[in-house]
Image 1: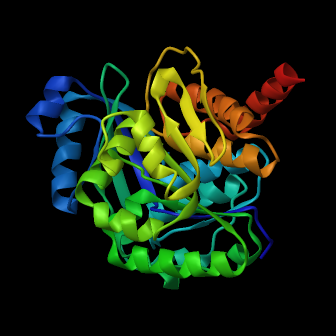
Image 2 (image 1 turned 180 degrees about the vertical axis):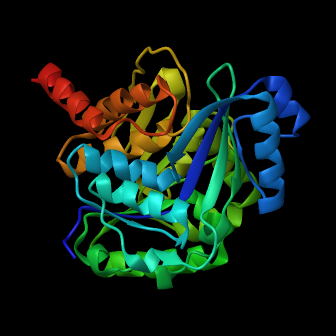
Length: 334
């Protein structure tokens, strides 16, 4: 297996996207802007209700860390994705999609069971609400992972959604130890306000006292640090991480290390679907850092890529579009 720059661990989910009304969210008791875990039967009932009354927009391979890994790879980085899919049609579709995007996977990821699915509900204001049946990915463990590429990687990337799984947290602990033994930097995303609210102890375990880079949005940052301002949240997060990125939607991003911090302006686009925007930001930011960019330049590229994701339906751009955006960005910076 070839060496990689990025070794990512996360859930493997097939997204089903729908344009929905706020009234529909209320009728289904779904909290707007968050992710809710569910069982297969409830997921099936919701899917039927969506098909009967809402606007279906299509199917896409998802999973937060997978979206990040696709962005990283499509921009020119090399990456491996550790996940778990079922030995079913959706599992084949999922892994084939990653491989077509140039991302390495392992056959260890395939096991008996059902591949996870996520109903992505996009409201009129472009906010995404997610209803997730994890399927077999809920049992992700180190048995599904080939850690060989991690030993020579530059970054280990951890998805905060894994905080709900006992076996996944144990797998991350193994990965963190390998990373530390081989001087691999560790990055994590808090993923979702619901993870901070309902799986706080799991996130603490994933962070394990200190990491090199934390990604989060404003709400997650303040909830996790139990503060009321982004500035206070940043101060506390810097105690846990050498570098911190707090995304702020159209306002841009607050990026900092132990010596400096910047507010990098956002980019105006017509928002269509926020699903995957934070994931794309993380992938582009990590790619830029890996290429030697400073925090400000990395954030500028990440804002460009993530804003284009927001301007379309689906969590990922076409693979070729990432490279085109990078070329335009480099020309403007030259």
